Amino acid sequence: MRKAQNYLTFSLAVFLLASTGAGIVVAQQKDVQSPQKNQLSDQEKQKQQLITQDPAMRLSLTIVDQDEGYSITTIKRVKHTYRRFLNNVATDNIMMEVVIELHTPRKLEIVDSTNAPPSKFFLIGDKVIDEIDNCPSDEQHCFNLFLKPEQFEQLKDNSIISFCKKYNVSSLDLEALKEMYKDGEPREVLGIKFGRLNKKLINQF
Image (cartoon, rainbow, N blue to C red; front, side, top):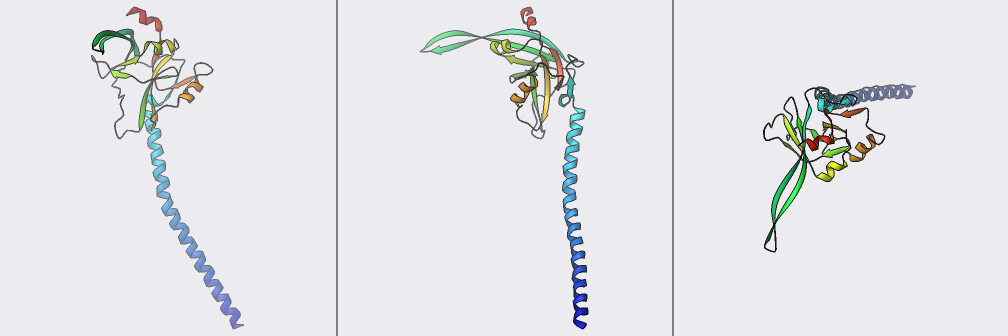
């Protein structure tokens, strides 16, 4: 009888100790995990806030051709002449370039700073334009897109010219971009719209 009582007492003590210990362990684990979850949640909130505040990171309906204040100023051919030497013989060469000038109502940062995760892109339809620079006359509100004549020919007339930012990406997924346009122009595009490409404007300059 005493052995049974002792066994019962010992079992009860082990059960209480195990239950209490388990509760402490679980509580400790919850305390350790919860700050990490909160931290991730805060990062997500900051990202969402950035996307909400910045028009270059929001989706925009293509039924509206351009956003207020943003415009395509000119489309022109530019001729560059340069001298090339071959076997001590100098020859003058000509390089043609198409320049599309864009105007913005506010300063637009086209280069990422070291601590800014969004990356920035200029698009004409489903094409990414890599050669961009500020206009010499107005560096804060004017940009030039530079294209080779063959690149310009490949562009679809009436395509929307836009500027967008993607969060923490070094390059756009070109296949996904083409997929968006496979059935024609999508209902929405990412970023700020400058208007639609009119190739006939090139003949006016």
